[in-house]
Length: 545
Image 1 (tube, one colour):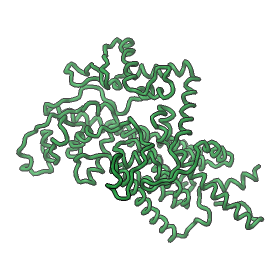
Image 2 (image 1 turned 180 degrees about the vertical axis):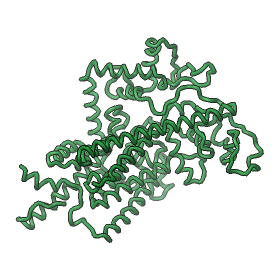
Image 3 (image 1 turned 180 degrees about the horizontal axis):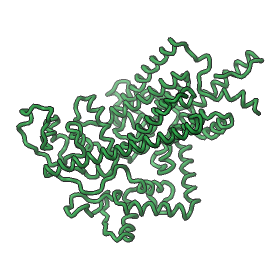
Image 4 (image 1 turned 45 degrees about the vertical axis):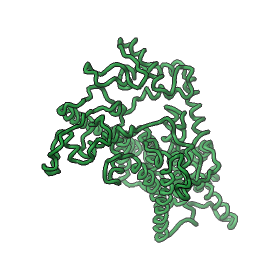
């Protein structure tokens, strides 16, 4: 058995076989040509993503639209028009959260006008340019529920579009999404190619770059749901030298430091991309060498993330306090209620259980959650909250009656929803195990296809995600922790599907099956090469790539 394992173990790898290895000149040419092709290739998808449904093909010669079969439905993570009004003041004055009920067409899109509306001098402008029209806008801090929804870091995502256009007028997240999509593929391709894993790099980039969910979310929709796979790819590019055994010196601790800061910062935009931190921690535990180093790297990662999160907390609170003084001084509408930095956790978990457990009262609906939770809050805590049929209660935060209460900001509401979920789990663990089992089945049965695409044209490769189980067992049998780390690296992109909600096409946000495909392709190539070499030279031993 040991002899069999010893012979097969070198074949379970993603390094290039000898016939794919180049000298220095060939490696440089491969990198340059590959990067140029990736940019041109993704540009084709961007162009196809510009064509909206209903556009006549004759109007755009030779073009078609992206396959929208895998687009999310009824999901919105960015309130675009409200974000633009906040960004107007943030871009010109760096003040946040300050907005106005006026439309974007009514705003004067220049720096001096923005400062004048705040009633503050623009130190960078000539005093004469600030004279003239007095402030005309009614300033506000909360626009419906933009502030209370949380994840305020998404305001930064409008900058690339404003820089590209030279103006914040109607800024969107499209340029950020394009840069993130292309940048993650380039980083992955360069990192793996420099490690002599060109076949693996090319295969993985081809399937990730053709992922129909990613293409729609990053290049066609103006929203923020396409980030988990791209962020995981960036983290894999950073950690590939460690996983593949090429980074062993003391400076390895820079990896958890950078990762913790980056992922905690992305948490201010959306939770799902930040969950990649779990894959990073698992990677350290698998391949980081001695157990002392593994523990220290995980501890460094956690400390960097916690410190960064705390820093962002101070930043947002300072911004809020400064904006409050400005809006109050201008006689505007301040916000005196409770606001969230992030999405409410237990509200989402309660709603998510509606994917398989409607017989217990759960529904994938905010209004259904409110109808369940608010009456119980009133009965348990002696409140008098009244439902309105929308996302806000009829009650107000203060006697001034400026802002109606959003249920997710109530601590009592979170307690009620948490106790309902945990109570059902504790009362019937078998039921919850069935929920998780059903979600796993959906995840494995209904991922995005393994696809090779160019613009609006594509070819789907027959594949099944269930192969992950024998592949992991094979890597364990051959004692290849590096391959286990690779196979599991994109598992974090599936965590919200397993832990929160598996309906409404949420399984499309996973990429573990695409990593599986790229790894198995490398294994098959190594096995075929070894068989061919053994056939030519019967006495030769096992190959080592």
